[in-house]
Image (cartoon, rainbow, N blue to C red; front, side, top):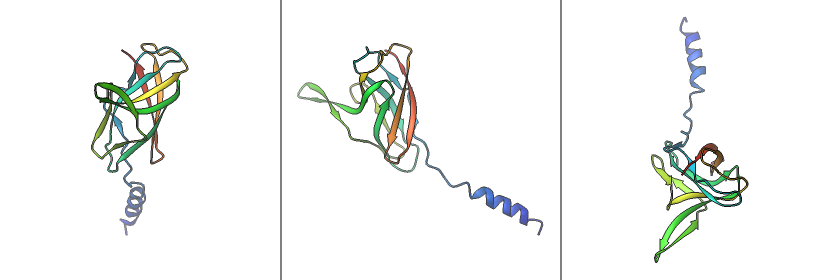
Length: 140
Protein backbone atom coordinates (compact mmCIF):
# COMPACT_ATOMS: atom_id res chain seq x y z
CA UNK A 1 0.00 0.00 0.00
CA UNK A 2 2.94 2.32 0.56
CA UNK A 3 3.83 2.13 -3.15
CA UNK A 4 0.47 3.27 -4.50
CA UNK A 5 1.18 7.04 -4.39
CA UNK A 6 4.50 6.52 -6.16
CA UNK A 7 2.81 4.39 -8.83
CA UNK A 8 0.18 7.08 -9.46
CA UNK A 9 2.82 9.79 -9.73
CA UNK A 10 4.97 7.79 -12.15
CA UNK A 11 1.92 6.96 -14.29
CA UNK A 12 0.94 10.63 -14.46
CA UNK A 13 4.45 11.63 -15.48
CA UNK A 14 4.76 8.93 -18.16
CA UNK A 15 1.50 9.85 -19.88
CA UNK A 16 3.28 13.05 -20.91
CA UNK A 17 6.33 11.15 -22.19
CA UNK A 18 5.04 10.30 -25.67
CA UNK A 19 7.82 10.66 -28.24
CA UNK A 20 7.66 13.85 -30.26
CA UNK A 21 8.85 14.37 -33.80
CA UNK A 22 12.47 15.46 -33.83
CA UNK A 23 12.89 18.92 -35.29
CA UNK A 24 14.88 19.32 -38.47
CA UNK A 25 18.25 20.84 -37.80
CA UNK A 26 20.42 23.17 -39.79
CA UNK A 27 23.91 21.73 -40.27
CA UNK A 28 25.29 25.01 -41.56
CA UNK A 29 24.76 28.65 -40.72
CA UNK A 30 22.03 29.98 -43.02
CA UNK A 31 23.27 32.82 -45.17
CA UNK A 32 22.35 35.08 -48.07
CA UNK A 33 24.40 37.17 -50.48
CA UNK A 34 24.36 41.00 -50.47
CA UNK A 35 21.94 42.58 -52.97
CA UNK A 36 20.35 45.91 -53.80
CA UNK A 37 16.74 46.78 -53.01
CA UNK A 38 14.47 45.46 -55.77
CA UNK A 39 17.02 42.84 -56.84
CA UNK A 40 17.21 39.12 -56.00
CA UNK A 41 19.37 37.08 -53.66
CA UNK A 42 19.43 33.46 -52.53
CA UNK A 43 19.17 31.68 -49.18
CA UNK A 44 21.59 28.83 -48.45
CA UNK A 45 21.60 26.27 -45.61
CA UNK A 46 21.74 22.52 -45.00
CA UNK A 47 18.57 20.90 -43.68
CA UNK A 48 19.01 17.61 -41.77
CA UNK A 49 16.11 15.34 -40.82
CA UNK A 50 16.77 13.77 -37.42
CA UNK A 51 13.21 12.43 -37.16
CA UNK A 52 11.60 9.13 -38.14
CA UNK A 53 9.35 10.55 -40.87
CA UNK A 54 10.24 12.12 -44.21
CA UNK A 55 10.23 15.92 -44.08
CA UNK A 56 8.53 17.66 -46.98
CA UNK A 57 9.54 21.31 -47.34
CA UNK A 58 6.76 22.98 -49.35
CA UNK A 59 7.52 26.69 -49.12
CA UNK A 60 9.83 29.33 -47.73
CA UNK A 61 8.93 32.89 -46.80
CA UNK A 62 11.63 35.55 -46.43
CA UNK A 63 10.75 38.70 -44.50
CA UNK A 64 12.42 41.16 -46.91
CA UNK A 65 11.33 39.54 -50.19
CA UNK A 66 8.10 39.91 -52.16
CA UNK A 67 8.48 36.28 -53.24
CA UNK A 68 10.63 33.29 -52.36
CA UNK A 69 10.83 30.13 -54.45
CA UNK A 70 12.71 26.88 -54.07
CA UNK A 71 14.93 26.39 -57.12
CA UNK A 72 17.39 23.80 -58.34
CA UNK A 73 20.20 24.86 -60.65
CA UNK A 74 20.71 22.63 -63.69
CA UNK A 75 23.25 22.61 -66.48
CA UNK A 76 21.89 21.43 -69.83
CA UNK A 77 23.99 21.58 -72.99
CA UNK A 78 26.37 24.05 -71.35
CA UNK A 79 23.54 26.40 -70.36
CA UNK A 80 22.85 27.00 -66.67
CA UNK A 81 19.25 27.55 -65.62
CA UNK A 82 17.01 27.27 -62.58
CA UNK A 83 14.09 24.87 -62.21
CA UNK A 84 11.30 25.58 -59.71
CA UNK A 85 10.76 22.86 -57.08
CA UNK A 86 7.25 22.44 -55.64
CA UNK A 87 8.71 20.63 -52.62
CA UNK A 88 11.88 19.09 -51.26
CA UNK A 89 11.89 15.67 -49.58
CA UNK A 90 14.34 14.96 -46.76
CA UNK A 91 14.25 11.27 -45.75
CA UNK A 92 14.89 10.29 -42.11
CA UNK A 93 18.57 10.54 -41.23
CA UNK A 94 19.36 12.36 -44.47
CA UNK A 95 20.04 15.99 -45.35
CA UNK A 96 19.60 18.36 -48.27
CA UNK A 97 22.12 21.08 -48.94
CA UNK A 98 20.81 24.41 -50.25
CA UNK A 99 23.90 25.88 -51.92
CA UNK A 100 25.18 27.88 -54.86
CA UNK A 101 24.76 26.09 -58.20
CA UNK A 102 22.46 23.56 -56.53
CA UNK A 103 19.22 23.61 -54.56
CA UNK A 104 18.57 27.09 -53.11
CA UNK A 105 15.79 29.47 -52.13
CA UNK A 106 15.54 32.43 -54.50
CA UNK A 107 14.44 35.67 -52.80
CA UNK A 108 12.94 38.02 -55.39
CA UNK A 109 11.77 41.61 -55.16
CA UNK A 110 13.85 42.58 -52.14
CA UNK A 111 12.08 45.34 -50.21
CA UNK A 112 15.38 46.46 -48.67
CA UNK A 113 19.03 46.23 -49.63
CA UNK A 114 20.93 43.32 -48.06
CA UNK A 115 24.30 44.44 -46.75
CA UNK A 116 27.04 42.36 -45.16
CA UNK A 117 26.24 41.71 -41.51
CA UNK A 118 22.45 42.07 -41.86
CA UNK A 119 20.23 39.30 -40.51
CA UNK A 120 17.23 38.09 -42.50
CA UNK A 121 14.33 36.07 -41.08
CA UNK A 122 12.92 33.16 -43.10
CA UNK A 123 10.14 30.68 -42.36
CA UNK A 124 10.39 27.11 -43.61
CA UNK A 125 6.93 25.59 -44.19
CA UNK A 126 6.54 21.82 -44.14
CA UNK A 127 3.68 19.61 -45.37
CA UNK A 128 2.91 18.63 -41.77
CA UNK A 129 1.82 22.26 -41.10
CA UNK A 130 5.05 22.75 -39.17
CA UNK A 131 6.74 26.14 -39.57
CA UNK A 132 10.34 26.70 -38.48
CA UNK A 133 11.88 30.16 -38.31
CA UNK A 134 15.53 30.61 -39.20
CA UNK A 135 17.85 33.60 -39.27
CA UNK A 136 20.29 34.06 -42.14
CA UNK A 137 23.35 36.29 -42.02
CA UNK A 138 24.19 38.32 -45.13
CA UNK A 139 27.78 37.59 -46.20
CA UNK A 140 29.94 37.19 -49.30
